[in-house]
Length: 112
Length: 117
Figure 1 (cartoon, each protein chain N blue to C red):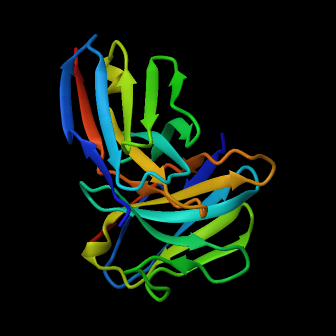
Figure 2: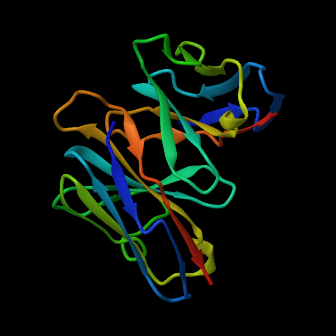
């Protein structure tokens, strides 16, 4: 069974600290991996998409790495701000039908 | 990025009734999906909405409970039928594979928060 796991489930840091969010998946034969942000009661906002041929993607303060051989991806958020407080979801596309398998998410709180 | 309009954003419904959720995309897309997010949990795929044919449902989801339509490449509806309190969730529309681009990024609507009383 293809599974996606996110650790930790929750994270609280003071403003200015760097955030490190982890995602692991059971099958290294992936098409791509996407990181999303979800605010309470809202939909998902796509943050970064990493294709299977890529090792990392960057957007502003966000950087995501991908290591297919070990089945891991890490999302780094530099110099965290209170506005970064949200749940971050990792989703993996294992097949060519565009379906995504989601991790349970990491809920981040950045304290001012 | 694709712009997705999902309506309604929230609703409170009586047991035994139905709710239909609409998803409109600003560009033609190959794939449209419906997900459910139960309170405190991650997303679970309900079905793939296929244009002009019956939707493809995931294990545990059936057409009688979650009928889906997709008349064209930009629009889909999900109906949640015979509502019970266990159906209280956020329902999300997702699209991927815009027809005019090779981009495979997935995008989501803002979700519909359903409360059944």
